[in-house]
Amino acid sequence: MSARPDETASRRQEFYDRLAQRNLSPLWLSLAALVTKQPSSGCKAAVWRYPEIRALLMEAGGLVSVEEAERRVLVLENPMFAGQSRITTSLYAGLQLVLPGERARSHRHTQSALRFVLEGTGAYTAVGGERTVMHPGDFIITPSWEWHDHGNDTPDPVVWLDGLDIPLVQALDASFMEHLGAVEQPVTRPVGDSLARYGSNLLPVDHRASGLTSPVFSYPYARTREALETLRRNGEPDPCHGYKMRFVNPVTGGFAMPTIATFMQLLPRGLATQPYRSTDATVFTPVEGEGRTHIGDTVIEWSARDVFVAPSWATVRHEATGDAVLFSFSDRPVQQATGLFREERLS
Ligand code: GTQ
Image 1 (cartoon, rainbow, N blue to C red):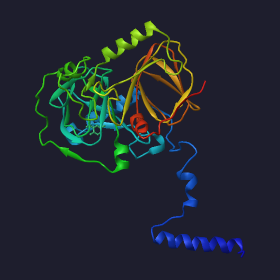
Image 2: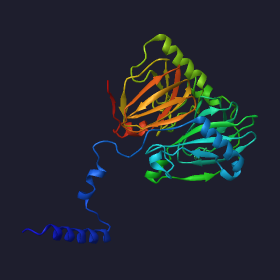
Image 3: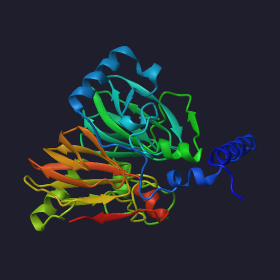
Image 4: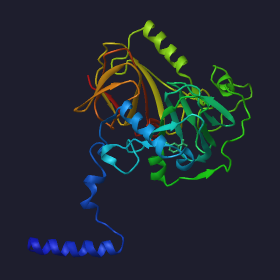
């Protein structure tokens, strides 16, 4: 039986309309867009320059109090995801400002957060009853469902990069949040306690693995930097990554956070790395130095405290024009736990 093409089309359309009324849809119209040959979210390479964002953040400081804002943050939105508060498909990033004398009140949520300190020494974030003092380059964790409040008793503003798994938690529809009801959580442990207890190549003798997040809330930059410098003296850099290390949960050997991987890499002056690509879209922020990164067809020039993002499966190669140190984060733990992670060296 053969029908005229326009008759077929109209019969099909009438059928699709009836399907829609029953909350059904024909897969044959969407299969190619749903199951793509390679990653295709539309996430784009992009850069935010620190001097520019800093000026806007300070302007926000004059316009909105921390009490009103709860968290005074400018969200870094991928240009392809405008209005969606995501820098990659699965991750959120923002720049947070706490002015001298301010307190950002205590709350907790199921989203995990990392803080990467860009500017200011001596402010703190409190987690688990302990204040973690911030220095530029420190990587600090706020685990899922832990109370946290931020404070700045120094004469200078503090600015850090927030990285959260907000879009991931959104996709899973598993967001919960509460306010403590007091501005600050009670301080029950002295500064430095968790670093001595868990971050000194030691663990309390009766410690049993519990929880998915590293008990080391703070990974001070001084230690990280020293390790990278020693590695540089001792051997050749990796062709694709320079001297690149991942932050570790000392109890499990796994990533420091269950949903977000964090890395620090040293690229010696003049190093041009070989291209690679991986399925974990990655947010980078240089701590020191300057250079450029080729991401697909895009070239991003960067210097310290800029933030840039490389999409999933985009070819990445770096060129350091001065000795450079890059902090970065991605959703690699989730991709590895689910068997999705892929990485390829292209040279
Ligand atoms: O500091 O608790 O950038 O709850 C977004 C959500 C920071 C925070 C953000 C948050 C926080």
